Length: 247
Ligand SMILES: NC(=O)c1ccc[n+]([C@@H]2O[C@H](COP(=O)([O-])OP(=O)(O)OC[C@H]3O[C@@H](n4cnc5c(N)ncnc54)[C@H](OP(=O)(O)O)[C@@H]3O)[C@@H](O)[C@H]2O)c1
Image (cartoon, helix red, strand yellow):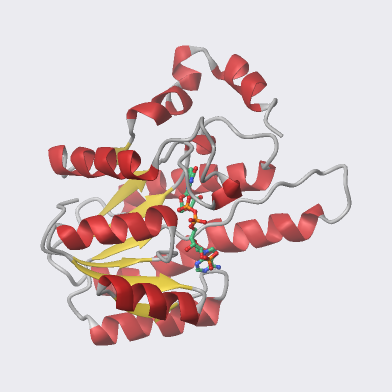
């Protein structure tokens, strides 16, 4: 994806990676629209950083329809959509109450981006150059046993991105997957977690990868490569064993 001169919608951009990407992309000369499920947070962050802001709860089909329609009305030049919003919640299938967590995870992390694609694709196909950017995870490639459904949604996002890219070959719309490693955000309270990557370092690397390879399909910072390549490198079993220790 080219990193300047776009009009970009980013979901879940009131904090963490989404807000970080919004700020970086604005600095590169893009028009940025942020979306989030909480109106107060959207209003506060939009005013603070000079974005347009729209309420979209990605777990709600109506909210996606209304929100995307509003964005396209206000910004007909929209040509990039970043599916970033996500939740990460632990579940234990041996304890009661895990199914609603699993269902919420699928609705937010997998069905949400799919519905967003369904809603924006007709518009994007009419643009000369457009991209859908899907945020997956290193856990798409080796699951974290603490979060089975989260991991499954991210594998799903990877597979969906790969397959849709093939269907869209020859159109004006490209598909980019960003697969982050652990990054210090509020997801799973990782802001202070030593093993996770500092957010600004992650964003530096993402932007330089995008800048260096505008035609790239996957954005893989160095720290995520052991996850991405575990199968190919024969380290999958030991990696899964190590991830099994996380509580
Ligand atoms: N941080 C990591 O280690 C890591 C690693 C791999 C992948 N990722 C992925 O990166 C993406 C961003 O996560 P993050 O680390 O930046 O965490 P974060 O700071 O918690 O950001 C997640 C964002 O998604 C929003 N969100 C959650 N549910 C939503 C919904 N139903 N509708 C709209 N927005 C919703 C949150 O809004 P609220 O403030 O309202 O909750 C928040 O703005 C996620 O897809 C995550 O899976 C993160």
